[in-house]
Length: 468
Ligand SMILES: [Zn+2]
Ligand SMILES: [Zn+2]
Image (cartoon, rainbow, N blue to C red; front, side, top):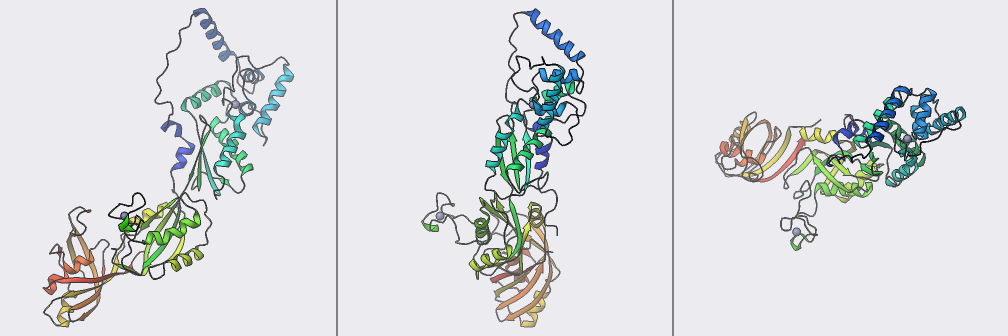
């Protein structure tokens, strides 16, 4: 099994392409009306000049194009990006500086137009590189990570305006603003933070930088661990179960000893709490391949699960040591094995797996048959398809319908007068207690029906889960 399959996240799409089309921070704004011009002639003259400039000024790398770019206030980074000169590994701002120097040698009177407020390409974003990278470095300070993805978010209008300008002035093939800025940020941050590599898929950390607010948003991806648990003691629920009286609110109540929990332990708490502590995660989730009732043990090879640690600050774990620690603290309650790294895709896999299960069940029955007849009658259920109406005990949370489930096999039937025990293997989703006591005839056929007497379950164990 591949512990790290593809498709862990679809964030790449939103980081690299099309994000601005799905999110427009200006979407709720109403277009302001243009102020009326007093002097029509002035406006007309401006219009004429603009027409001339677009028609007659050649694009970079023509010297007149470069001079025009300098006059309208293009910064060194953007000049390096749009000038169309060979870069040969030099930083963009160094290229831009050189291009500017050469232009000034040709025309010492060349200067930036008086009305220029900022670089028309990047709105001076490249001048903020140091500030941006400091913000990112401090936002990820203290988080263990090696695979980091950067998303840069621009306002839609800025992207469009820059593209139009680039199309009229820049050398053919000049790189877009977004990709260039993203690269520049990545190289500056990499110089400040050691041990990170920039990735486009399966990141541990996703950084979103907003060019509008210069805000940095960090998303620490969850850490997933796969394993199997054996539940050795009855009365432990699989997941945390809020107190029925207080629903776990406001620090609990008297009836739950102010724990907020109906039961002191759960498999989730026994497995995840040590993991949360080691990873310094914010919270956890527990995904089991199905679940057994609270009064049912789960033995054999145990039940597969994936523990999800949300927003962990640490990712390097000694899994053997952790396994021992968990098993020691949960001694006689649960035991885990086979802990390894996993991922979100495996959560879906184990949720969707319909594994056959084997159970051992023990019950009482007031039958009138001898041992041989009891065994024959119970054995007759092997291979049969049960019709099970939703049991009364779960009817409050499950739709009332009839499910068909196959009894694969019945073995090892033991009869001690009125106490009977057997092993049964059946399809995923079979209600095994109901197979025995029939739920007042709602499961058909049943052990109670073939033995023509009332059956009462003493205990049930999951003997094995037949998953990979
Ligand atoms: Zn610029
Ligand atoms: Zn309570």
